[in-house]
Length: 86
Image (tube, rainbow, N blue to C red; front, side):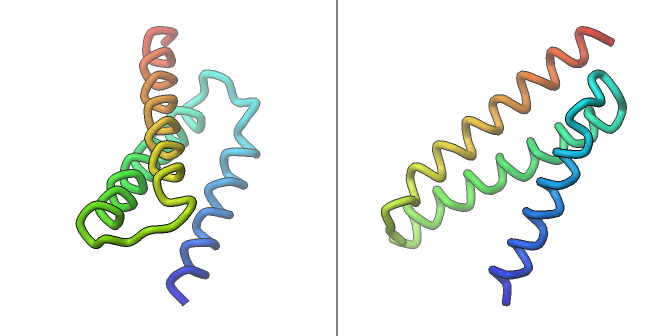
């Protein structure tokens, strides 16, 4: 049940980002970037903790950590660029 709830949350975030993709420089883009930064940073930390401290393993665990960390860096970079433009 928790996995299904997380999937619904990810779907909602994805739809919100998709619908705001053309709002360049708007407050909605700024808010979505912050939301995605927090999500991706949290996901990378939690997945890394699961692999390192709880000894969980799987084929996609460490690639998922790397992907979420890269997305967090991208969001932070985009927020920094957004702030320079405004």
